[in-house]
Image 1 (cartoon, one colour):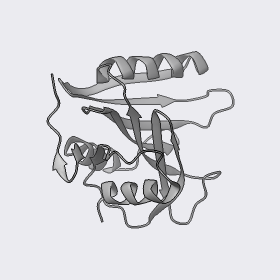
Image 2: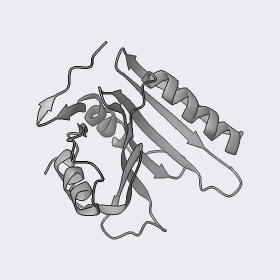
Image 3: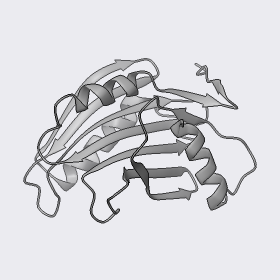
Image 4: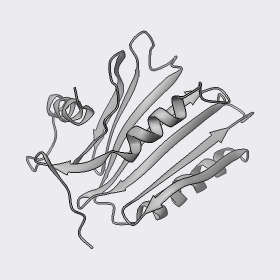
Length: 174
């Protein structure tokens, strides 16, 4: 099953306030063994967090997130810079690196270690520009490093992700 289809179903069930069909993001990742841990649909931001089937949202080891920042007009780099500043204001030990970038997306990795009140964690994320806003996909693992092949697998899936609307790939307006 495609994550985009699952996300659309979840939002229909939690009662979207508008009848306008919004963009979603398609991520060609393996989703067996995952379940929805939490989600929300607030004005301007929609978020769904997937966790391993045997875990809970209060006690997870890995998480896959799809977020939509509706109406956001900033570039993916500007959104990433804002997220980086927020992270650094909470934890001075944030390590941040850009993995790749093009005109409509940016992929980055961050990690925190020995941050008071936070477990050690490492994340890969990609921001994709759409016509209706910016989409964020992320994979995070608690701990100090990814398992062998894990980072490469998620980077591959994220590199193939794209924004779609009405089942068609979105061409981003300039």
